Image (cartoon, rainbow, N blue to C red; front, side, top):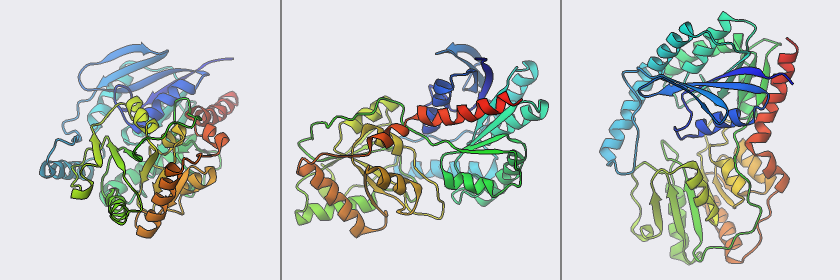
Length: 403
């Protein structure tokens, strides 16, 4: 079978660690019928190398202002200053990768790529701007615009920024051949913004990328609950910790160990919980999964909002390690639907104190009584990234073979 040339445009590629990086690596790993070139970002020098059968071109980022990073050693004042700086950067710029985008254009003008497919992934918007440029140069290229999440409708973006990317959103919907996003509600939103009949819309979820664990592991001597990821905005563990404190004081649970892995935001923990809450610095994806596997339950937090279609980054890895999930999420959104459908855990709204209490006690009793956790094994398997990328590959091949 003929192999087509695919150019993947993204600043998120190893050694960068992020949920976005994991999605990009999965495209490279499971799109089997393509010769893949990744056009990505470098802090200093240009490089061109083969990595696991993928050509990786790293183009220097000449941006003057770059997003601030965080770690737990940063004090609260400096953390808030950094967060404010990032907010101002988002408000004043289209994105902080404009210097990288400029370098990429220079590279493309000197090195005309021979590609059949361009796959660009938002955020940042620069990836789509670069792909739009290539599509305008060669209309025969199949352009896959991976939106991932909401764009101009994202209420957490400043209004000025939403208007800026709204312009490009219209351009993308008028020129892209395939639009992908992580959930059906987001796909349906984009479908409603265009009258085009020839565009393909696909839900390509995130997923886990390791062998799932279907064994029933030995329980810890102390009930161990782990959260991996970061806290920001309204996403915080305040209500969870409040309920845990009440349950301990009332004697409804005997003891608990809470692991926060990769949390960079400084936190103040109640005196009663100080010896029970443990923080771990940001770790590799593999180490993060090891923490999950050694846990009795996994904590997922995403406050309810008007935005629908939010699975959150770690949900699928939680599913893949096959441990009960304590999900404090919108009960009427996709994450809750999937957890309920697969019997993957227990769901409550993050603002529902009584609901959180019931979820914790159900999950605790599962551990306390040594009961077997019985999720839908077949549904667990479909949450693997391989399964999701194969959906995209099938439609891509159909589209290419028509041309």
